[in-house]
Amino acid sequence: MAEHFDVVVIGGGIHGVGVAQAAACAGYTVLLLEQRALAAGTSSRSSKLIHGGLRYLEGGDFGLVRESLHERSILLRIAPELVRLQAFHIPVYPDTRRRPLTLCAGLCLYALLGGFQAGSRFRRLRPGEWDDLDGLDTRQLQAVFRYHDAQTDDAALTRAVMHSAIMHGATLACPAEFVGARVDRERCAVRYREHGSDRHCTSGVLVNATGPWVAAVTSRIDPVPPGPPLELVQGTHLVLDGTLRRGAYYLEAPQDRRVVFLLPRGEHCLLGTTEHPYTGDPDQVHPLQREEDYLLEVLHHYFPARSDQVLGRFAGLRVLPASQAAMSSRSRETQLPVDNEQRPRVVSVYGGKLTGYRATAQKVLQRLAPGLPAPRPVADTARLRLVPVD
Image 1: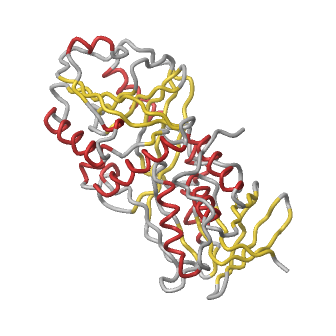
Image 2: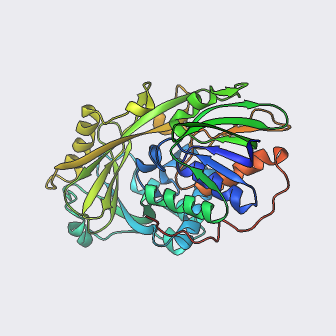
Image 3: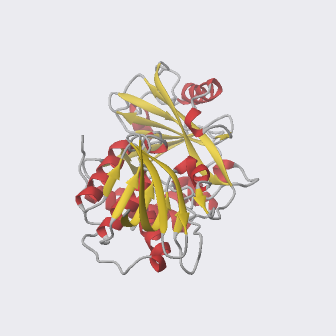
């Protein structure tokens, strides 16, 4: 007889492990299937920021920013070895689109939505402090604002959340390829391949948390559940020589006024990211020369004396709703379509932010509640300590 789980999760990125942890802590039996390795995809190729999304205020996504700042506060508390506050600097020049009054208003709102906690404070630096900003070009510099967000090691955070899920009873199958599932009103019959052997199990519900592979995995479910039209967006980061002593930099790209971050990363720094539509196989995504040229042009514009030696580069994919709007202006709200609103058996995670993985997991369980037995909570993910694991 096939083994039965309350919840089967497909995908070992941050959202998949977040759902596994939340379900296990709610008292459910959980199996997570990951084809390659935890955080093998986008969850190891992000900007590695735990942040509210200051730029999302321009699009009026106040609820998303408030939720993200709340989650940032939780992660700073439960994962101090993995998530740390970092000073960010926003320089303003004559051609900067976001003027000082606009930035001041945005940072005030950011602080308000963050509950005016210690990490929400900001200030305008005095001109006498400008020369100490890691080689930032001070010619024609008009203002510099300093605020705070947080950084993490995204892959390490993913592993820590999965470890917590396992400690609360979840089962990890890795490497394990999801082959397909047959869904009816009572259950999901799941087929997967582990260590070269075909395996079967049943589950009450199925969670597709495979990021850029979400559509491909959905096609293996019978009947195929609905899902919104989506686009894949490639983002590339460069690892550069040299350290940053004063923190991170929030830069307005001179080419198109997009936001680009220059971030400390140990003894080096991280520059990113780009936004390009991607239509190929997600397994084949890689940095493009034009993306590297774009990012280095941003670096030269703001830090003309810094080394531009590239030590490494990586590209990841984001899932965004299909739209005619510019990619940078589209909502980052996570979409959670289900196969049946009255008695859901399958939910797919479209989009989502690293910062909000825990809140997204709670929403997934709420969406699936009609198809699950009553929860038997054994722990609260907002209080569980997350620690680095090998």
